[in-house]
Length: 231
Image 1 (cartoon, one colour):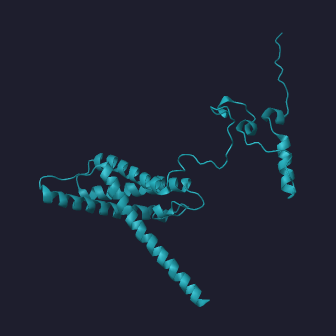
Image 2: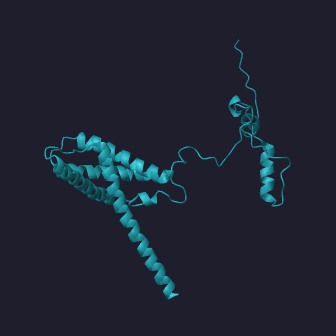
Image 3: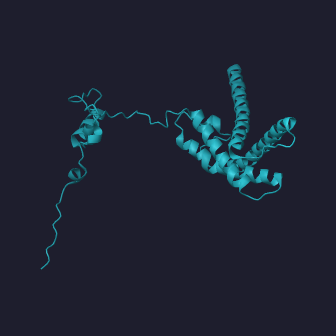
């Protein structure tokens, strides 16, 4: 005769080890503005989590404190460095896979294809990544040509057209660089490679974005003056 295993029945608060007394204190604090908690609130990680672990103790034997506002190392990097690096890295990767990887002999075809792929990557990957990383201050907006948080078909096509224009400027940068090199040595030319391509792409992109931001600023300033005069 087989023995049936008996499972120990337990309540949900025992299973999840809920701190019901702290929940009651929170509810009372929300109901009463003059409520004062009993005893000092501990910020030790062991007390907050209910788990006494050696990782919660420093090398000096002190309890590690819980800091809900602690910033990780990524948030300590300035926004402009993160935005420029992401743009530069993706542009260099596209140069490697498209300009170098695809057998496109015609320079015009290469410019069109590379610009369209770059616009596609910006619309699908880079801009959503910026929106994911930004806070309510929208600090990544100055690094996007079309900083709209919603997906629309027109932003997809405008990004394609815009980055073809950016690629045309990048090709002009290479022509200017080679013109300077030919003044020194006519037999030497600088061909496209990911590192300098990414730099030229970021410079052209940020130049157009800067012009756009300046126009938006002037229009807002003009409208503000008009509204102030009408009042």
